Length: 186
Image 1 (tube, rainbow, N blue to C red):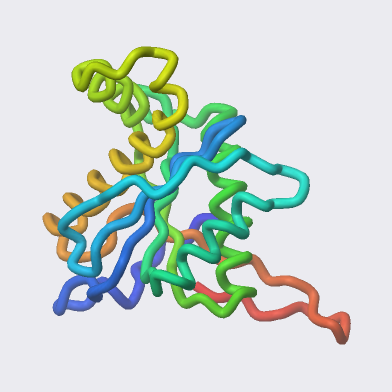
Image 2 (cartoon, rainbow, N blue to C red):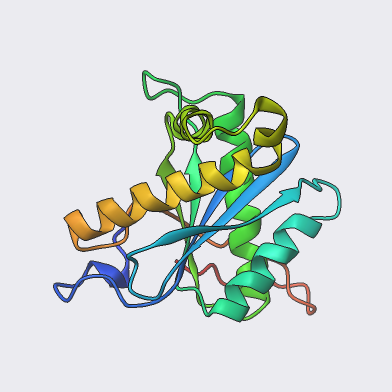
């Protein structure tokens, strides 16, 4: 579920200081990037093998978010050039929702935001080509570079808007041990 309400970072003071992560969700791999606490520089972190059944890749992202004390995790929202949803769009939304739940359950206060990622992979391919990386070597890092693109775009938007970029993802309510529904955070 995507929450379109404004968040606490919408205050006139602007976004809070802290590390932000960028996530590029693909069918086979997930790229991860991180910013410095001031949101100036985005750097690649790793490429993870996607694990839809056990969520091992999400657990690593949660561990990174906790270890870096991340305040926001930006997940790329791959709409088509006309801004319409595709199968990849729905996959990314479901991934972002699961990640938001995983973060919440691990005790992280990091918010998950979906950001438009049109052309992030195309731009990443172009950058790697221009840097002289052969197509064989690109596959190893393309997802990280795409995650950097997503994060840089979000950081630029954040600076321009003076609030976190993208659309917030709400943690879905989960059944507690007593069989009652937990509350949904937003």
